[in-house]
Amino acid sequence: MNLNRATEGLRVVEEICRFVLEDRNLTIAVKTLRGKMNRIVPHSLLESRDAAGDVGREPYTQDEGRRSNMENIFRANMKRAEEAVRCLEEFSKLISPKFGKEYKNVRFKLYELEKLIAPRIVKAAKLDFDLYIVIDTSPSSFKTLRKAIAKGIKIVQLRDKSVSQQQFLRSARKIARITRRAGMTFILNDHWDLVNRAGADGVHLGQDDFKKVGLRKLRKELGEEAIVGISASNLSEALSAQKRGADYVGVGPIFSTPIKAGIKPLGIKLLAGIIKRVKIPAVAIGGIDRTNVERVIRAGCRRVAVIRAARDFLL
Image (cartoon, rainbow, N blue to C red; front, side, top):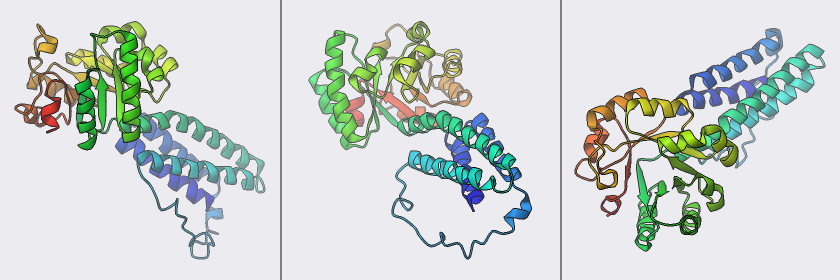
């Protein structure tokens, strides 16, 4: 029965890697490990399975019947697999020491996979949004933030290039307290070194800043679960951001905007081309408002960031 529990738990993890993370390598790794477990024990031993008479069939705890999000599902099923493999490791030694050794190897492979997959699941949940609100440090922005929370908006970015780092940090800490209570994802623009001090979920960087800092340093300083978003103004930059390990890419400006004055907008056609090629979440930004947002959505982009038009979307 423990073999059942282990392989069933891993099958759920495999589905998450395939359909939620859409990661081919992780999907194959989990599938391969599941197949290996089935080959360790001779099939003749499986014939002794008695599902109908199993005393563990009826009990159904309150925790077992509750799952609030994808992370809960992943952790419950990975833990189920790890615990079951530990049992297989111990009891299979009664049959043959080599079985115990093989199950031990499987158990440590599970630990490695959990370390790889867990941060990805956390970030996938935080990046499951439609509208991305960008605010500054002004008092009116806090009103916008509270309206966004009331509307069920799931992510906000603090962007303000006109204030000192200390002023930015003070505002970021206030926003972090508000967003944490609301279960909202909070991103800082540019100030990657303030993410942990502010209590934010991650950072959004331009191409040049990302190249200067580098993903290795960001991960070392911020941790694997921190979100790293990168700006891209064309397909090449978007693919480069993906290759270098960005969790999402901000694509724009899509339309003309005074915030990016003098920069030629990408337009809908180029946006659609990027959406087709990039596998990580892509967020359209730049000059998007209620008059043109449907064109962005029809181009295949379901994530949209707004700055000046934020209040209009929250009416």
